[in-house]
Amino acid sequence: MLQLFQYNWQVRNEWFDWCNSLSVEHLLQNRKGGVGSFLQTLFHIVDVESSYIREMKGEPDLAPNYHDYMSLEQVRKLSDLYHEEVAEFIGNWSSEMDQEIVTISWLNDSKLSCGEILRHILTHEIHHIGQLSIWAKELDKPVVSASYIGRGLH
Amino acid sequence: MLQLFQYNWQVRNEWFDWCNSLSVEHLLQNRKGGVGSFLQTLFHIVDVESSYIREMKGEPDLAPNYHDYMSLEQVRKLSDLYHEEVAEFIGNWSSEMDQEIVTISWLNDSKLSCGEILRHILTHEIHHIGQLSIWAKELDKPVVSASYIGRGLH
Image (cartoon, chains in turn purple, blue):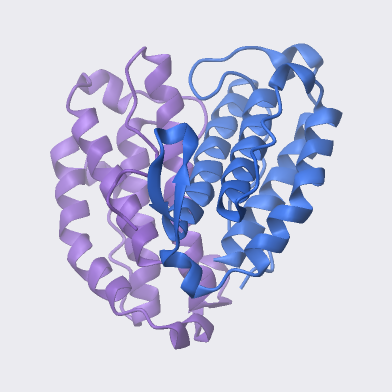
């Protein structure tokens, strides 16, 4: 499971790099589907990952507001800042945690297993990155490779 | 890992259902990015999953030709047909298989671990489904939920 998270983190950073070539207008432009723009998608991925990880840790959601992070540099810094805590938590994952139950406040206090939450975080990011790849092609730009193979993640 | 495949199979079938509401023109229309159309994306997902699974089993690639499967019914039938073999293989996965090495003929005879191939199949499907969700919204249609949570997959 760790390798799948490493895949997500690699691909996310490649999209941050890729976004450097975008004008601010294209970065922030509201688009059809997904969560609206390139930047807001990246912010959303970072925010959701951190929120679920902190809920599993029993820590309060940091709940950053997108309107306070409306530049590529700010969202990337936020991603880097949260990454340490996220990577430590994922790195220490054990199969016993799979069945631990956590109450998710923003899902009507649903009681979910940590395994379900973990797999949700994973699929959530890959799904949104797939959306970025369409928007990128619509701008006639080459996209970041989504291939898992060839990343040194065995 | 099995649950992540179950997620993919559920979501794929929901997209097959969803495509029933599309006109043939919209189903086959070539779009920007991805592998071109709704139908060809679904065909590609089915084809790639089967090809890698059969390579891991040491069986020849069935290599279906998209031009022989250009209706929703035919691609769905192909998905159902391959599913039995795929599900059996994934259901019998053991952690020892993770490090087994397989030569992939269509990747210049690259030698990959089965774990890497397995994770590639997983992320490959989720990525392409993310692309469908953008095209669907561009047609102003409600999309299939991508949420892992709430599918009974713990």
